[in-house]
Amino acid sequence: MAHRELLARHRSVMPKWLALYYEQPIEIASAQGRRVTDREGRTYLDFFAGILTNAIGYDVAEISDAVRSQVDTGVLHSSTLYLIKSQVELAEKIAKLSAIPDAKVFFTNSGTEANETALMLATQHRRSEQVLALRNSYHGRAFATVAITGIRGWSASALSPIKVSWVHGGYRYRSPFRDLSDADYIKACVADLREIIETTTAGDVACMIVEPIQGVGGFATPPDGLFGEFKKVLDEYGILLVSDEVQTGWGRTGEHFWGIQAHDVVPDAITFAKGLGNGLAIGGVVARPDLMDCLRANSISTFGGNPLVTAGALASLNYLLEHDLQANAAKLGSRLLDGLRAVAAAHPVVGDVRGKGLMIALEFVGPDGAPNPAAAAALLEETRERGLLVGKGGLYGNVIRLAPPMTLTRAETEEALEILTQSIEAVAKEVQQQ
Ligand code: PMP
Image (cartoon, rainbow, N blue to C red; front, side, top):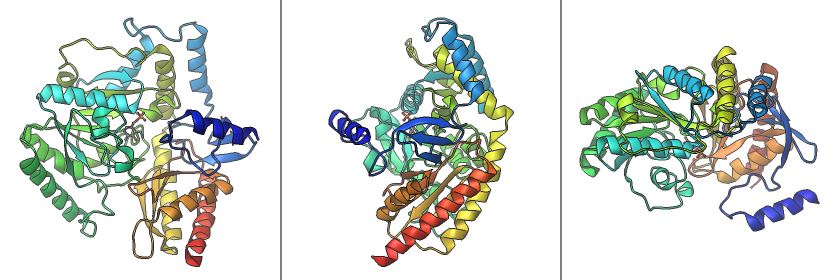
């Protein structure tokens, strides 16, 4: 079969550490709205597209038209050494949306590069290679970002120019402070932060980097206000705060445009990627002007901010603002969360349902509460059989992640809930039989 042959060729030519989903991986041949169709003609509702960059959905005319108009000029790429109008317009919009006073923007091609840039700025600005990161974090796959990634399965190298200290706060469900009230949890994490600074650093730390909701870490969602309290401690030491919004940006969390806004704090820099391009490769950093301008050597990114992707990203940003997709994410996200909590209450194999907006996770556990990656893997296959694509994640690979495009409809929400309910029931039955 053509599909089986392609899989064999993939396995022989690509690295073995390149993750592939499903026992029989899918080859997507076409897509529209929130649905993708594979090479065999099976159509799936895509509840992982939002993570995999399609914040808005597939085949959006406004975005395709903007990209096509740029293609029609003949200029697929002109060096960023020249003026590019869509790049400047996009930067102005993002600077304004960041709420950082007089913010400046630098574009990259990926989230990894965005975080590498933010780390370079912070370490240069503070003349320190020390960084605070959250346990259970994911920030990228280059030398500095892999060092601040607190998930063993995703940090393939320990060689790094960065000295990292690890702080509690992101992943509450398996933390020693899990059973505390929100207020006491925040107090415990703040005390931990202070102790970490005092005991494992020289005090002159460059920055702390946080994901407002940890993406790869399984949509681990800290209580609102935590990072605002962290910032008060960081300010005492002059430590900068970087918010990695690669997964939480652009209104996905429903309540706010950036995830960090749930914490009543304006960070010194925000990094972004994925959803902005709605499928096009773009990332970047928006930062305080003194922080952005602190580098003393010239730097360019050959493709970062090129006219093709900035035309598409500008159309994508305009679309999500004009259609208030953030409000849609809040509305349909709370329906999903309520529906899934009701199903989980009847099935102890689901230990936790968490998230915000259209960023929702189910954590699968064994009878003793231990991580149950086999149940999560089974759910991935069960949902696929029923025509729904979801994601996997978490430190132990036992978390199912839902992040559909933010143009999701009410009917699609109900359809997904029905499939998830049936799939959870099937997995619960399998677990009982073992
Ligand atoms: N930060 C976060 C929070 C991410 O989720 C990711 C990607 N999963 C990255 C950074 C790295 O982005 P990229 O894969 O575009 O390099």
